[in-house]
Length: 83
Image (tube, rainbow, N blue to C red):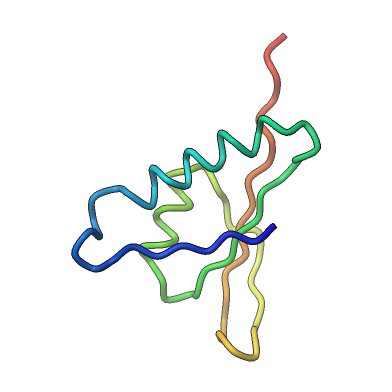
């Protein structure tokens, strides 16, 4: 599953992408088969990186893409379950 998103310029800076990603993460964890979520951002895309950080994602590496150039690779592991 690949998820992409964008926010119209007139609506940027209002936390919409962060809220949407938070809802997606909550939904993803309802499926016990999902163990990890992964994402990629352009190295220069600081707003998208902030969205991922606010939702608990951590940088897991970097790769070069022929079309998009340098990308940061992010991941978020399933949180531990409460006893």
